[in-house]
Structures are given as C-alpha cells and as structure tokens.
Image (tube, rainbow, N blue to C red; front, side, top):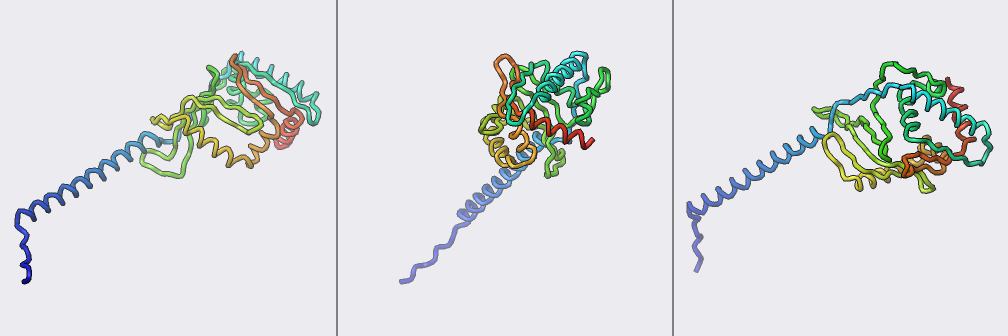
Length: 242
C-alpha cells in the first residue's frame, strides 16, 4: 500500500515562517551591529593629519646643545678608523637636542645652532619628550586608507629604545592609536617584525654601522657607544650637500 503524503498543517507553516523571520531579523541585527562597531572603531582610530608645536628653545637648551656639539666635535677630531668611543647624555641634554633638531630645517641649522630663543614654534607631524626613563612620542602616521574621519592614525607611544649587537629594539610601556589603547607586548612583536624587514634600509644600515650600543641608565642618562670616524664621514657628506 502506498503511504499517503502528509499534508503540512497551517500551524507548522506558521511556525516555520516565524523561525525564518527570527533568523533573518537576527542576521540583520548582527550585521548592523557589526557595521556600527566597525564604524565606531574606525572613528576611534582614524583622524585627520595632526601637527604638533615644537618646544620653544630656552637659554638652557642652547647651552646644552652647544656643550654637546663641543664634546662631540672633540671626539670626532680625535677619531680613528675602527675606534669606538662613548658619549653620555643627561636627560636635559637629550631634550635640548630634541628641541634643537625639531626647530631646525637642515643639518647646518642644527650644527651651527641656528635656532634662537624666542623663535616661534614650528609645526611637525611628531612630538618627542624624554622623561621618566622613557621616550614619549606622538606621531601622525599617514595611511592609504581613506575614511570619513581621516586617513591618519595618530599614535602615542611611551617606551625605552635600545641598540645592541642584535639590532634596534624597543621596550614599550604603553601604545595607543587614536583613542584605542593597544597591548604593548603585541605591538613590540609587530615592531620587531617591521624592524627586521627594514634592516637593509640605507638609514638603518648607517645606524648599525655607526652605533655599536645604546641604552638608558636608571639615572635617566642616554649612553651611546659609536664609531666617531664613521659619523664624521656622514656629517661631511651632509655638509657637502648644503
């Protein structure tokens, strides 16, 4: 005997349609929620390009800059090929050099202390301060991603850089992109990969050729072991291009 086909009752159809509607509404809701979260995240991370005012030079900055240049000039004058020398900079000297470099438009401006006390601050896409045994850096990073909120990621980084035989490394305390705090340990891994990628870059190669070791002491001094003869050659090339 053939079995009769069971007719689906109107109640079953209604329940099936109701379940289907719930699934579709849920998918629409979670899709909308995903886009809201994505847009909110993009809003938190991406911003228009940011520029920061440089620190105005003080008489103390000019004094420290001149003093460091004199010490470095004496080392370079006595330099010989293959000889490693050490230069120790105090926190005040490092910040004075940062202020002088940020307010200079060329190598000659910096070397000849062209910046003067009372000069108006300049606009830079970065701001660097050395304090509390760390460098605090603000940097407006341009990207190829265009969003309604801007195409730059304004980074704020606090950490302790160093150089040794393994290369350039950074010990990070905190990192944020826009209003989003990032885990320093994960960012360090990304930085390590990026630094490895750019090891063959001409600038990185020159740093490795000149600087043997650099680190920050517990007393907030920056200690640099370097080849002065090689840095003298770099300075000579730079001045020839002026």
